[in-house]
Amino acid sequence: MIDSRFGIQGIGMTSARTRNRLVQRLKDQGIRSTAVLDQIRDVPRHLFVDEALASRAYEDTALPIGLGQTISQPYVVARMTEALLDGFDGDSVLEIGTGCGYQTAMLAPLVKKIYTVERIAELLKKTRRRLHRLDIYNVQFRPGDGWEGWPKYAPYDGIIVTAAAPEFPEKLLEQLAPGGRMVIPVGPSGCQELTLVTRKKDYFKKVSLGAVSFVPLVPG
Ligand code: SAH
Image (cartoon, rainbow, N blue to C red):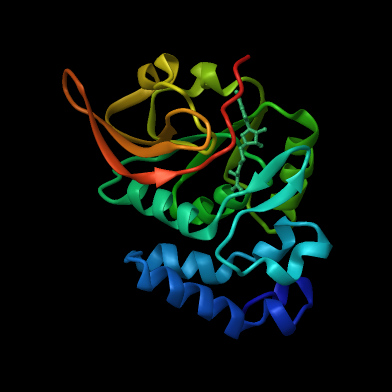
């Protein structure tokens, strides 16, 4: 069924073979969730980057998407999605840093509802259109500052932050439901720790998932 929605038969660098190679690579690197690996195979990543970069869309690498932003590396997207959903119990996920929407598209069929916040309104508009073209409708979009979260629909059963914060954003911790899970890169530019935060009865449990490098979660 790959790409049948777009009338493309998956030729050349976007072919099933190329995608399966990426899936195998992520498996070799320890991604275990079948649901996540299926999504890595099925989400047409080449439609999230400029045409000039489409031939590189199934390499395990971050790519520039314009406006100084990047599409995250597939391994990191897979790792974050797997960590968020392992033991996830609930309906709603808040995503900070929509970008081109690749992470959003990965997650959309695996949860009931996503609320996503992006500070660059122009980028968000394009992404909303892209996700609708992919028949993804369980996402609500908001241009705004991710440091504030999205109080209106809080608390969230899951929060996923795809830009790096120097420290844990207070408002996001507040908007995490009891028992909820948050995946967030925390630390100085160029050297952050991907962290899983679980909200326990009266404290936040934090577990490191390894080093990553994200663009910064811009203040304000
Ligand atoms: N999730 C994307 C990667 C996003 S890159 C993917 O799947 O590829 C990080 C994004 O966070 C950028 O689009 C950037 O504009 C956005 N961002 C940075 N600071 C922000 C803030 N304070 N609030 C909301 N979005 C922010």
